[in-house]
Image (tube, rainbow, N blue to C red; front, side):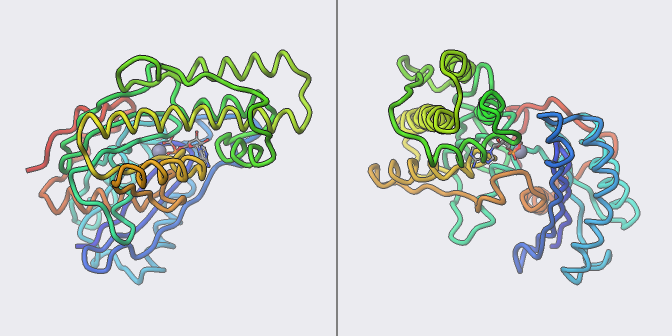
Length: 338
Ligand code: KG4
Ligand code: ZN
């Protein structure tokens, strides 16, 4: 089975082809980062218009690169939500139209499920069941993943997502957008313990997160000290350490509570090297395994959508145009696939 995947939920246009026999055949990504950089964040209307410009040329490019004609495809998967309404509509309309024209099924994919399944694209993938830490610009959650569509959220952020906290803190520090990679880069030059920020909600039981207080702590540090390059690096380091510590503490707690022996990390913040190293250390100390997608598949991409589409099409699912785009769509609403 060969599936075309289309991702347009936010500011990246991603297209990929996954083949059940040969694996991932190819993928392309067009990042709109430069388009939005001057505004310090994603401008939804600009994002939608750019997806319209980019999707079909990328589809053509990937199909040519993968020597795949329309008759070689068995289905089209697209991100149906959650995300920006206009951006999602572009992917949904084009995905449904291509499937209709090619007379193959279309399948609507939940963006977070795509992230969750991304580690399956790597060599030596995890097998169900496992625990997942999902950390992106829009979501921070820990979930137990039992099978395709069988997910239980054990904890999530009560306010900002961790990626959002990285982005807002980077903005405070004048580091630009997107903030995650910028904070990580600046932190390399930081001196430890010049600042110390709280590890929110780690002093009470439970698996929920809160990151708005951490962002406020960074704001206070910025207001109380004149900023030079060194101080920016020191604050970036202290912020990164606090955010990563918080995530690691909750993962350890969730592993203990569920008894799961495999942890997967997904979403853009999963590209963070400090987080990867710390979770690697935790896994070694507990004798469990941790799985990361390659950094390019932590952030938004078409490959994870093509793969999730393949899994669902293989299980017999498809969706008509009436499915629409779902800007708000909780992972909890998915049901186990028979
Ligand atoms: O998964 P993603 O590409 O898009 C969403 O679905 O939200 O995640 C984007 C988020 C942004 O907040 C970005 O700052 C963060 O992931 N990010 C990072 C790193 N690379 C991307 N955060 C920390 N360290 C990184 N290296
Ligand atoms: Zn994402």
